[in-house]
Length: 623
Image (cartoon, rainbow, N blue to C red; front, side, top):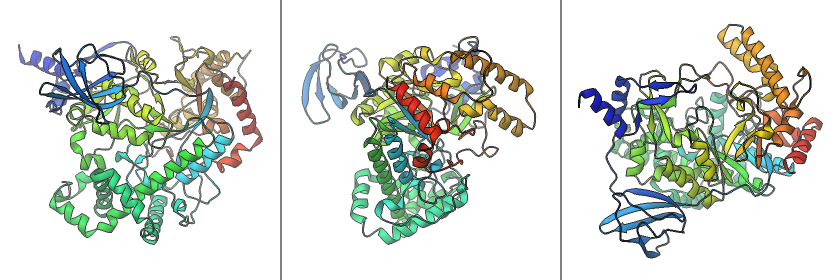
């Protein structure tokens, strides 16, 4: 074979796809130079102990087609003997299989994930945007608990939140919940000191969050709370540290080092601090033990806050909190420093060119390496999912397509110069099902964008819900599909944090923002929106021309009547607001993740127009 043929064979062998199909159905091919660059980034060393996964009731097959008997040791230590290829395992969990001298870990998933116990509706919120009775620079886990109580009393079944993954407390200017430092721990900047009886700081409460100043001030106050209370809560924090082990200690060391050394993360630090196990880091940890203990305390306090919020939610709701799992992490963060072998290196992840992003998307984050996952027994992914559902009754998986394949881009290349890398989707989805089963949590898989053939059928088979979002539910001609015709195995939604609010969409607020940012009016876009409004009005069963005022009640009633067991609407749509939380493709041009709600949740829900909409949801969704 020649060199080019060898390259193509090597790419195929490791799951790099040379050929792919774009959103318009056109065949595309990756350049050889891109394949070569990506191949150089992958370490395909096989695992010492292979990892298998099956569904309960399936017979066990091992690589190589081996037959005969095998020894099985369940998680609880129970030993069994079974026949390969015919006997099945009926116990969900992670077990050990012995075939002669060969050893395997085997993950056994339930046939289906937990399902909503009843038809109902929920609200999606951004935690920092919420207000309660306190003057605060932004909402926290205590504010979330108050909101959960208010929504539960109003009849909600669930409360969906954006990711609470650990960010960078020493750099509060990095506040996007989808670019975390680590998904194994939580955002301590949302910790509520009043949970342990400590005073809440007196803060300004503007309509837009000033993250750099507000975050620094909150962190300083939390340090005062730690100093005043560390002896009183020491036993609980020590038990939490012992339970979470060295990974938690490493994460706290990262945060303490970042507070001292600054920079964008560990690649900017002096070389001696880039090794998490090196002598310089050990000396720093000894010399600054109280700094490390402070960040361990904050993780404990954050966990207590989320547990309290879920307790508040479940006192009224059948599901409670629905956590959100971001697709990746910042390579310069805690996970990339302490466990960099877990992550893809030399590449970032994103999306290929499509109608919403003609140049492709480079999200500037990394993801778990599929080959490293197999070498580690998938523990990083197991722990990530387990962390997400620990204090939740549901899990939304951002960019669930990434469970099967990821668009990876070599460092320094454009987003269009990438390729799809196959992921061990069967195993990853089985792990999600196991952890959801153990937490009794529903699973929502974000299946938007360019969806590979068969993905939605696979999700449905597993009892994982897709998402049907009003702006995207259209036929091949671009006309809106009536919500009554949407799928039964997907969550019905009026919008997401990345789409315009319904009122904003109807009024063209998103188009105004785009025109302001580009400096160019877009009359064609405004005309196109007028045609879209007419199409949506027709799909809602409206007669004649669409009204000038946004028909919000019609939309809520129609989406609530969709055949899905659960409807989720952004709080902004329940309140009839016109501004969205995040405008994709922008960083500073739009106040992403900075908007506050116009009042405390309980007061907003008591307003006449909101009470009317709550009544619509209750009458329609519970029928």
